[in-house]
Image (cartoon, rainbow, N blue to C red):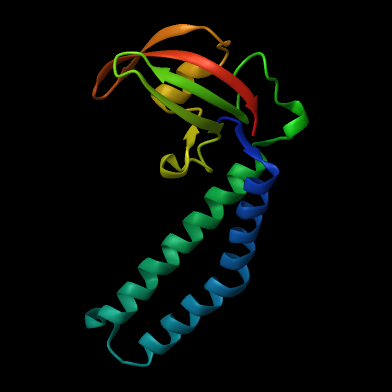
Length: 160
């Protein structure tokens, strides 16, 4: 099995993962077990689509539980006091200029489990997020994206 890399999250992101794990273990597992039990009562398992669906759902729930447990074993929590304002890193709020379009945007760089581009949270694994890491205000650089190369300039760095 491939080694999972360390995942960086905020304390809020850690709490969400822990809450999801607790929900899956205490509530969702029981719901799925009940669905399997109910589907079994329908008779012949070889032609029982409800049973097959319940077993598939059970597999997905158990996989997600294992994935979260693996993430939690390799997690690093970033506290806002750890975030520097001179160099962009996970937890930084970065104001950038898309030079080619002359458009400004502001993003918070987060770990992959917290990424939500529509709310301005980009992953440190994404093309733009990873290229911003380690940059300073005034730095200008080119980022390779699936849609082509873009030029970005860092306008500001602050704590989230």
